[in-house]
Structures are given as structure tokens and as C-alpha cells.
Image (cartoon, rainbow, N blue to C red):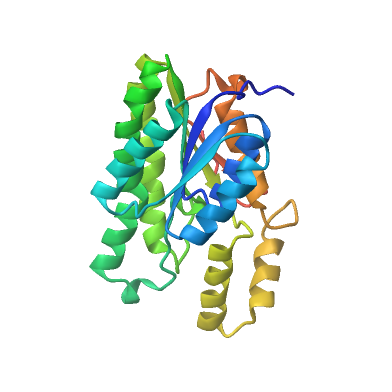
Length: 263
């Protein structure tokens, strides 16, 4: 299937690992050139090389998205390198796995800066580039803690709920510029970050990591953890013409584990 991404230029924050890497590679598979940012140069270089191996252009910029100046520089450098921006995927993430009584103000503030405020700031900077192209796509990645209670991930819940609300609010404004804005809520996804969450949960409950994984898998009706590529396929859909009249929506890719009825 032709998703009409050949020659497009996509930006993916947190694009060198996990879900961001999978999205970057998926967009490249369908002909998009990709600019990524991340905190570790080694993983950036590897992912850029893997993207280029697919026959498209790629660039990687080491960036701490909790810092306003580095966000501004990343967007400017990305636009200069690519020449245009057609797609933005906000995916950068951090996580503090701890119960409420161990979370400090600084930890809440840092998570808000890395996730919610970074998404807002980058969207604000990228919108004029999408507008110059006559429209474009934005996809925000905000975990299932936007919808569920997770005792060891309260900072995630607060920020992901904000991402979901920002998606809906901003989509109404961006529509006048022919830009769609949607959100994906990943369920338990087989990434390094989720493994660390399982390890902390095992420590808190005195269960083994294997027991925790088995329990979480048992809570998923489709019977397995989500893979990063599952999230990437949803992002690909939102970036394609198939979703040209879908905006302001939050979709869970969770294998059916979410129990809330969302209207």
C-alpha cells in the first residue's frame, strides 16, 4: 500500500530508541526522510545509519527536550537540514517509577518539562513549517496512564493526561492550517523503559520480573505485550492520507487491556 510519504520530511523526538526508533524506521520504510533527536549520541548514530540504509535521508541531533534553548536549536537545525517539515511525532519521554510518597516536586516538574511542555513547545515551533507546506501531521505519544491508575507511575499519569488534553485543544486550532493532531496511548510495550518499570514493581512487591511480565500479559486480552512496531503502525496510519479527516483523537494501542468506555 502506498501511504504517500515518499519525499516527505518527518521529525521524531526521542527517535533513537524504543517506540520512537520503531516509528522512525516505519516512516522510512514508506519513503519518508527522518530527523530525530535523543539524549545519547551513540544510539542516535546507530538509528540514523539504520534509517539511511532504507534509501532515505536521515539526521540526528543530540537534544535535551527539557531545556527550551535546546528545543529551539533542534527545530531550527532540523528545518535547515531537511529544508521542510511535513510530519511531527512527539515521542520523547522520561519516567520515574516510584510510589507517591517518594516523588519530589522536582521529579514532577522534570517529567512535565520532558513530556507535556516539550510537546507544546515543539508543536508551537513546528506549526509554521507545516503551514508553509499547506498542511501536515502531528502525532503525540502519551501512555495509557492518561486513562488508568498506575501506582508507581503517577508522574506519567499527570503528564500523559495533559498530552491527551493538549492534543484535543491544539487540534482545533491547527485545523485552520490543514494540520491534523492525534494521540496514541501505548499499553505495556516491550521497551527498555518498561522493563525498568517491571523491575521496580518486582522490587516493591517481592515478585520476580518474570512474574510481573506474566501478570501484565495476562491482563491483555490479545495475549502479549505490545511491540514498538504496533505503535509505529498506528503512527503511520495517522501520518497517511487514510487519516486525513481524523484529528483531535486519542487511540489506545493496548491489546484491549484498557477497561474504560471512551466516547
